[in-house]
Image 1: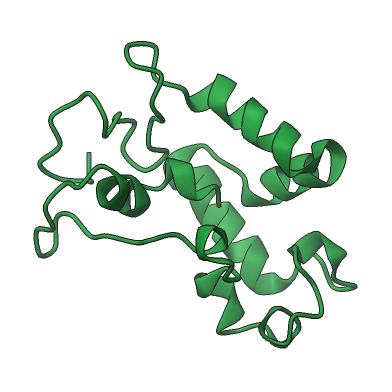
Image 2 (image 1 turned 30 degrees about the horizontal axis):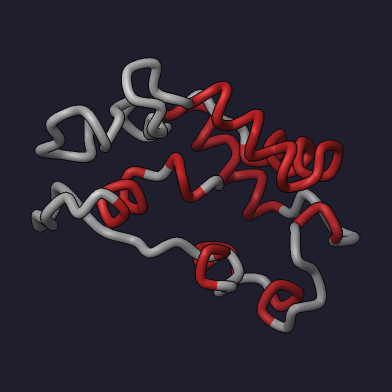
Length: 130
């Protein structure tokens, strides 16, 4: 997941006040030199630092990543596995350029959240949900 498209990260980044059950905050994983918090707790290879990205693993895509990918495809129109394939093909910098083109706000240039299709920089946000 690209943190810059996550509602919880965008709320944190744009100082949107927390609201219990409506707006949560996350400081981002890789931005703090951490591994994916969601998968790391369930993946020994990530936890031990044996792989940096899931595609470097011999069992990629694992069952857990597959389920998460299906949920993101269904709910948000984004594939985490395709993101990993893009990182493998383009490198992180190329992937981030592609993300900006795809999810950049046409009004202010900020990022539009994949979770609710809102720009947390220029729109009034009262909930991260639709």
